[in-house]
Every structure is written in C-alpha cells, then in structure tokens.
Length: 113
Length: 113
Image 1 (cartoon, chains in turn cyan, red):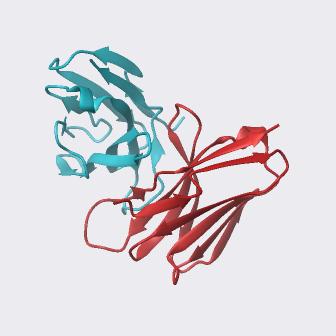
Image 2 (tube, chains in turn cyan, purple):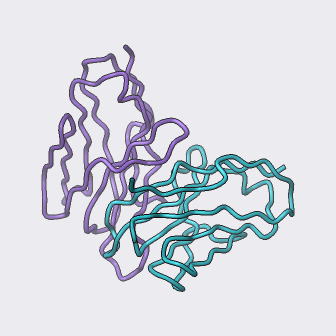
C-alpha cells in the first residue's frame, strides 16, 4: 500500500530536549516536505527536498533541521524545542515535476512544555 | 500571506444539500488542487485542475477555475454526513522557485444528518 509513515504520532516533551520525527515513504517519490498546521494559519511549509542530499527552506524553517540521506526518509529534527513549536506536523511526498498531488502522512502532534 | 484563501471559513449544511467552497489566489498558477482533511488526519488529494482548464468533475465533486479572477470553486453535490471535514485549496505557482504547493487556511464543512 502506498503510504507516508510518520513517527511518533503523539509526543509530549519539555523545552530544550532534542527530538526527531521520522518520515518514510514507499512510493519512490523525489519530492518530500514538512508542514506545520496551526489553527487559523493553515499549512505552512517548514523544509522541503527535491531529492537525496537536496534540501531547502520553506516559509517557517527557524528552529528546525532536516536531512535527506536516503530517498525514502526525510526526518525532521528539533535541536532545542520551544513551546512555540507546539503544533501538528505533516510530512508529504510527491513525484517530480513539482506541483504534483502530494501524499500526506497522518500527522504528528507535538506538545512542548 | 497565503497564496490561496478559502471562503467561507466554515459552512454548515443539511445532508443532501450542495456545498460550495471558494478559493482565491494572487499569482499565476500552473495548477490548483483541492484536498480534504478529516479531523486529526492527514490531507487527502481530491482533484487537480490545470491552468488551461475551466471545469473538472470527479464523482460528486465539481471544480471550476477562473484564471482571470484568480479564483476556484469546489462544489460537493448531494452532501453526506461523511463529507464533514476541512477542505483546502493548494496552488502550484508559475515561478522559478522550487516550492511545490502553497495551501490556504481551509473551509470547515459540517454536514448535519
């Protein structure tokens, strides 16, 4: 089954404790992206990747890191989480060229205390 | 600011009625897509309309695109309680940047049984 898998689905943690949210897709898609969703603000793009070892900033990259060492995986790293990063996070993937329909994971709800 | 803005922000209708949601955007686009999000879940792609198309159908969904007005509408006919969800438009813009899609803030649809 074609899918984007995120882990964990839920996480409550404390300020400053490094965390990683994993994302994996099994569709051989070149393009992968991370979004955060906040009430009234819709989806805002954090980082995206056009292919292995190619990553770029989205609209709200501050406080986040990503890596793309393998085509299927695109982890999101919060080196020193802060309460303003409490949000619902989505990973998505699509084939190139850009602008194709995206497949989304089921989301990760992060609470930073 | 968001490239796509949905209107209305919230819509409540009775089962069997039609639901119409609108999306406005600001710059030239390659295509416009509509997504659905059930509460707490990832977005699911519904339909894509290219900039040279004016209308597209998929089951009970009808999408129109007016590039002169930079607007699109999503019509769901004969709505069902299971259509209750948030609906987002997303635009693929015609620029040289590498960002793939820009999402609006969504319309929350409630279908009363």
